[in-house]
Image (cartoon, rainbow, N blue to C red; front, side, top):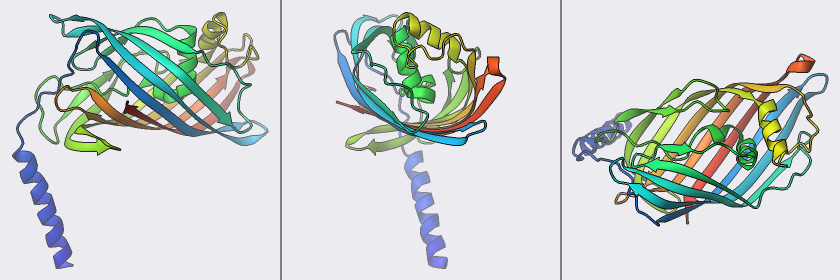
Length: 287
């Protein structure tokens, strides 16, 4: 027992001494015109919906796509870049009794974003195809796999606040999550600085508006079955994001996201509410 305690104390002391001896690190993403970053993204999860008069109904889902970022212009004064973003080679499937009829996935989803040297992303207006991706990704669509970098230098164990902006998924208020610097780490064969972000997000989503926009572009996954039905989704989701960034360029090399959701699907016109619990795992690996 004493030997175990001594070993544990020594390990803890080693970590403290190691952290104290590290020089502060300023984490910044390098912005270069005509540079391209591409990622393979995979997602999987389960969902259980408690349907009135029928009881719990379970479903699973998995999918993948390629995510490509091409920098087209850089504003050095603002440390900001214009980026063309392409999502392609999309695959998505669902299993279980709650699955929707098959809807064709768009060949490519193309949008424009702005990104700064701290990985703050600003997206142009969502299109119907973007919304289809948002529904496919579910809760994960509310959180970027790129953790916003700290404003100043950090040492191991330091933390900072990341603002998740209001959106169609979380509602009309910004949400704060906690991010931290863990020194060096790895995901699969990608090694660099390790960042983590955790917290809870609200869900306040008007599914009717999303279906309406998707119907206009012919990407409604229900095939029009929902019609004019008023439907919302409310609840919370617990989020954990772990990223590995390149030491030299600050570019994200890999990210894993795990999300646990506890929500209600509300069929407003019918006065019906269906509790839903789920879990989602997403992995992003640079090519």
